[in-house]
Image (cartoon, rainbow, N blue to C red):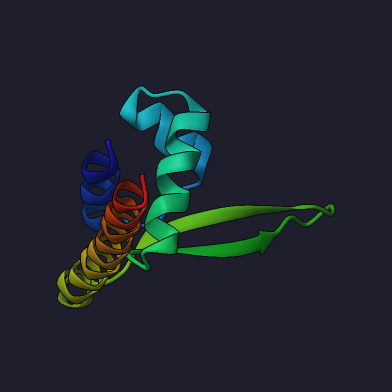
Length: 97
């Protein structure tokens, strides 16, 4: 689902979470969680926009294609480091039994 959303934003530009959910035929909460993950990996940006009569909404956009690969590589490297650390802790815990 993340890739579907990312491809759509790359081809059509920024979306509000509700609009993206409608286009993908997915629940808004599912799309929101996906967007949050992509924002944390810095492959999607989140911009707050104001409404004329008060309030605000968020618009999500994919980073430019030329930046995307580097950001994805970085996200995977961070994930790999965390998993490696967890496996080392697991080994230590198992050794202490």
